[in-house]
Length: 292
Image (tube, rainbow, N blue to C red):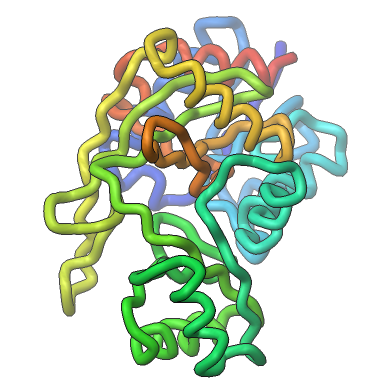
């Protein structure tokens, strides 16, 4: 019997929709004759007892999840997310460089080091990308460390804060849309497609209320993957191929009838009633991949 460990943290069970998705994975595994057990930090020594490891806790090269991934990978186990995918997706500078190298349709992006934060470079960025621009630190998740700047003062303010995290930041063209496409991909196959709607009066899917820690999330509208635009799926798959063959969530903007990649994320959100609304077999497909 294939034994699958699902690495989680306690916070993964705080949202009912996420907990329901985790139970869906467990049910899919057990219904197909596989063993599925939730693994916490204290259970890490048990990893060699399993055939595969499925990571649902937030990944980052500095987090426990990466240690779990690296351990499983070194032991030769099937693992989602694999350590290479985690590293590429965690470092957006590296990722955008790969997009450029392999000619992936993408949002126009410049890189700026902390030694280049001067009047001329900032003006050059505005001249090239227009105003406002979107500034990103390399290590971002859940819309954190992604801010907008419309003048030199705000540009400097955001850049200086982000340079505390990294010596290099990404500066992107601001592309306002009503939603971002999210395409879920596993092993070069589209799993699901949905729209992450931008909350009214905001400019990104997860936006903070001014002066408050609260984050407003837009609605998730699922689209049957068979009915999704072919070009959209083509661009998503092309972007994932430069990262790996794992499980990814590709953020894409539709601009003038074509599609440009915002970023590829490892450890994509999968919440019951959200990403799985139209393609409910995603649970079985992920479990089958882990059990191969």
